[in-house]
Length: 384
Image (cartoon, rainbow, N blue to C red; front, side, top):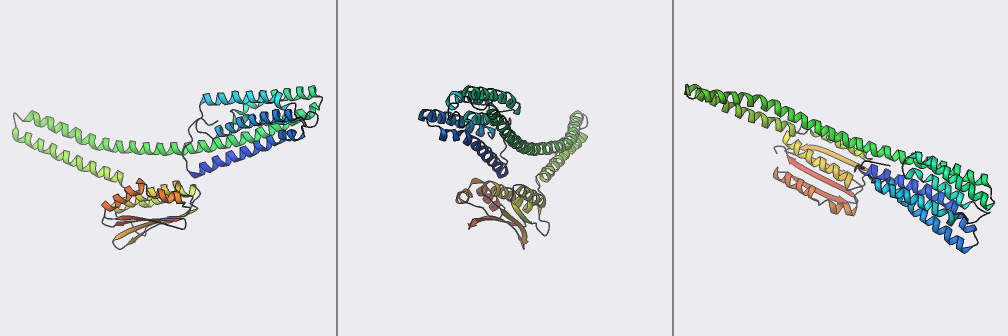
């Protein structure tokens, strides 16, 4: 079972989750069809009703187990309750299902195979061995008691059950690998951000540490000289003031350099993220280097536009083009796969805030949608 929270890793992980659930549900549904065959061969209506009730109860618990498999961080209490319910339903199914179609169809033997096959949905694959041993014992005892073939019942419960359990265990294991990979990418991103913060903090420490130390010494010297040499004390105080102004200017330059964004690198990063999510991405970078201020404004819009493509559309392709036209820079982001709901969401605070930001820099933001294709256009003055 998955212990850590499943990251909101985008549509790829969501599709993998859906595929896992569909695959597991299809396999278990096919397994339950075989004991259901016994209902069609039973002539006693009461046995048909009791058998159907037992199969329905097991199917409900199995559906809950399927949902739990892909649920982020299910609590230990929930899993314990699910295991108890699974065991209770399996035991209850013995008197309800075992009498169905006795002598003509090994109904409970097939249900025993389903019970064994569903065990990987409850936790570790090691639980399969004790469960299959118990299921084989019940299947053999019921076959001997009803006078049917013991060998046939054991083969059905053992071989089919272990086969289904192996397939389900592999699918659960593969899903957990996908979740762990997503968690690893998220942790890597957090680590990179933390390392960048540490780098910036170190730069600020090195910059201010030197200047503040010298300023403190100059101020201390000026204080000692004030009673005996006022002129030199004034010079030392003026030097401390000059150093403070220099430190402030250098700090501003450091922060400005930290905030500056390489637009081409940002464009490449957005393209890689889109391609990794299954979107065919075409990138047209600016032919010449843009002014830092304009590049920074467009980089912010580009990040928001890439996020919108992933969150608010089912895009199959995306084209991002940046070109300079006389005294302005124009960035156009176009993608398909836009639904009516996504179009309504385009008026969210994200794009509204970007429009206000560009307006403050003398630019503007435009959006339009036609035939499921959404276009975002950002225009920034070169001198912004």
